[in-house]
Image 1 (cartoon, rainbow, N blue to C red):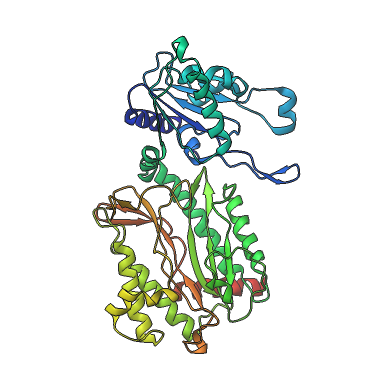
Image 2 (image 1 turned 180 degrees about the vertical axis):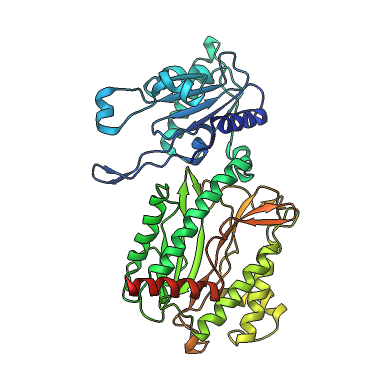
Length: 445
């Protein structure tokens, strides 16, 4: 499932319309990273580069020059060399890039030192994300310095550098309907994976075996890989926010917190569910779980265009503090606890983040120092949680070591939000019913 070429062309035109007169934008592909010795990590394209090109080859540079007579979109990429393709796979090549990728001009990446300085020369401003790749920064400054050295011969070096991220990342923050369709499909795949994990779990399994069930579902449905390292935390491991070892045995009576989502054509999904290993919540687990669920419902009620970014978080925190007071895990006055932040020993993170091509997607959360307003087409997560540390002696032992998070992906709309991840159950009754059905099926196989 991929976006149409017209979507990438529209983005390039939208970006160039915001650029200054007589300017140039230069965006390199992601670098190749070595895993160990001569083994490389699987290549994943830079999100900004892919957002503008739909091109997933390494060793490439994308150049946009608004108003250029011979074409505004220039691409440098690897040549098609048969002997190399035998070892590393097929390439598009500069000859086919105009037809395949919509480039106006395409050149071999090996010729970039000869050609790109000539494209830069005469412009007033360079748009680039400096500081992301030191190696490319040095290469870019080398081209600029080469032009500066020719000033006495009439060369015109650029006078200004400008960050590209503000323009581009604000574009990425508002999703098109085509992007939302793709993200819905990613969410559906991830929802199916979470359901499978709930149905397959058995006390005595290892966390990584559930991780394998997630990966199996992702790949079987067309996703190449997860959007981030999956978290499969059983028991006390559910209290570790970014737990990714996933190597502990699952005990009867444990809660299992799974935070996992697939990536589909460079778009992420991000779901968290918490469920009992044996298919039944204990009284304490159920009480804290329902409190987190109530907090999520309260947050969802505040997600609509025109509300502030922090409104859902504030609503969730208020519900959590009131509930912790009622259960005896906190004592005092609601307003004082909210002001002091004492609740943060049980809930130490925000209630959501932007979601898109990156799981923690780009875009500012504050504008001129104030929380920004939500807009139609923004996609965000909603993920309140509670984590009672196993060594917290300020609470009764029956609460210790319980970690719970419930996370969904939503699209901001004018009158509310669309929940992309509704395909995976989240009430106690729904989870227990799904798990009992799955466990019974395993016992009779």
